[in-house]
Length: 215
Image (cartoon, rainbow, N blue to C red; front, top):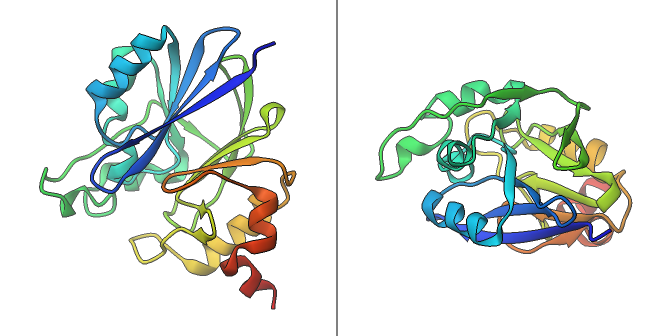
């Protein structure tokens, strides 16, 4: 079995990581957090000859959700988000699109997930982990078989997500990371919304925000 191939595509004004999670056996794909450059992302997917079966949003900020509808519609695929993120998606003041020169935007999802829900997509069982703190309805998507978790802006390489936006809370975010992410196997690859890929094990040992929490 060829397994999972993850491609990282950095898009938009704040350099957001959009991921293609491609099942090399079925040639199906998941698109995680397409925040901008819908035409570019769509063309790259077509070039690779893969079929996106879902767009997964870790949260509703503009830099993660702005191109979701266009990419999804290009392949007749549904958009998924956590049920607690509906207000963030719909409200330009909360999704931060009103701060950008492009103007205020409202986004929507087709399917809303719950904590612990397992999605059966692209040949994978994908567990939804509810991780509020960066936003009120942020979540991560964990593929246990492939030891991969897509975390959006919950956890970064050596850092954690901002909590000074509407719906943010530092204490809630750290609790989310400690309860939902750190228990995952150490070799699990962490695919964040910005910057570099890391692992759960590295963050457990070296992330200063998490080390400070344990003192």
